[in-house]
Length: 271
Image (cartoon, rainbow, N blue to C red; front, side):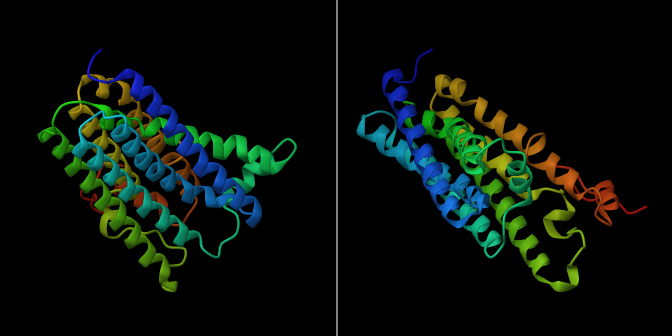
């Protein structure tokens, strides 16, 4: 398989792993001080932004890859990651521990913080490194930028819009006391039960297309990223767990019956 400078790319993988680890360890220190591990959700987006920035710099310093593609893929990743981090940070401000982490840490054998470090922070850091493979491969791939990269950027843009608009719509809905206990079924949420997760799906398939633009080797080493992200969003910690939590909410079954579970489509008519 040709098209990637394997020695420089391997070194870049190491720097990316170090960046992801640094973000997670710093976040762990903050969480222990605050006594709340929900801050790790903010680190998810920050980790990707850090990996993108470090990869862009290390690839350029090694004299590898196309400079424009490096800046393009790093900028798109950083914009997505920082927006997500800010949104999650605002959403969690003033709240206590996330019930998910409370339930997990209640079963911790021994020290709760060390268990959280192993099972949450280091695991998320590993996932950040794995999922960011298209960003890393695209930065080291040779050849000029073509229409495929711009197609990937367009898919990314649609995904970011879905995610940002969906998050904003949900935040406004929840801010109205009259909506307490009700199911959000307006705007993008009437077309899909998870516009934010669908947006993430498009973002990472878009970044993968940019990696494909860097050559077949870059595509081959990074295809696992959108596949893993798709699994996490639909069958892992995203849609599946959230819908299990929502299943007993009044009006959920009716909403689920008329609204797509993931890919957007017009809502079915009420019976």
